[in-house]
Image 1 (tube, rainbow, N blue to C red):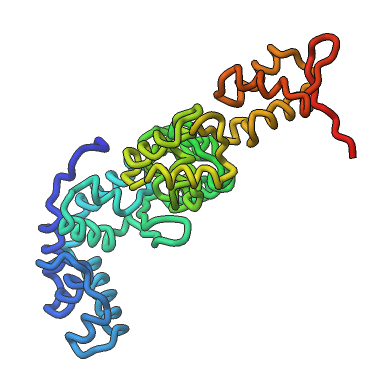
Image 2 (image 1 turned 135 degrees about the vertical axis):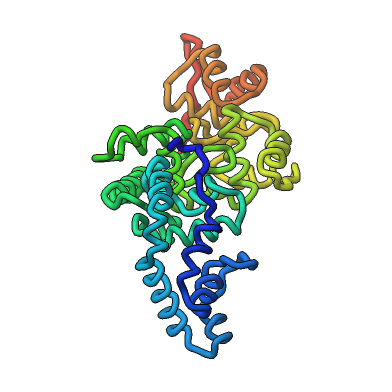
Length: 349
């Protein structure tokens, strides 16, 4: 079976046949619990119990007994090919797959999803792992492989820091490196990406970069976080007005220019490097006016010529060369030696 090939059976017809072996009440309980009737919503144990005047635990017993009765029936045995086909579908999609992804791959309709879900529940081939803090609801047909994927995703998460932002090709490479013992036939991009989607702890931001879900780089919580992603994507200093505009275009969030400017000023992740131009401090830029930048460079590098000072400052600030020279000529802060090199004026206590 090709991964994109549609199933050959009608899920609704199959479930109706399987339900036909039950008593009226048992059939009604399953239809309500799994949304197999006209209503696509799934009823709670409490709601069904109220209808029949029984406890929720009794409803659960009826549900479990009804599923066992279906599994023992001749009609169930006659549908072996259906369950084999569904098993093969899960296998070629990776052996373990998020429930929503599996159902969506077969049909876009919620009502059909409910019938498919019911077949997965009653099918002997399938095991469901319920959603937890780390993973989404998921189904597997290979217990050993599923254990390997779970552990690999946890190792991948541990290898990331909250600051990490990883491109999709790189996150796929990093994940494949963690897939210990997994057969090579599974290490295809479409399957690896599907496995990545199992995790609730690793996800993408709207710019397509991957990282820890709890990181503000992935789930931005305000203008500052959006601005960081915009400037990082731009890759070079950018004017705050452009930052505000790009936030609105990329994230569909209202970003006033004045508000954006104020937020950039407050956050140490950003450095003002020119008139309204901001860069990221992680790029090696540091704060301060031009004079302070010159002082720091001379302290770090030692005496430099005028040309060398200009060259180094322009690596950090987008200012006019004359602005640098005016600051450099201030005798309160800088002195020139006989070789024409500048150094900071030493302050006396």
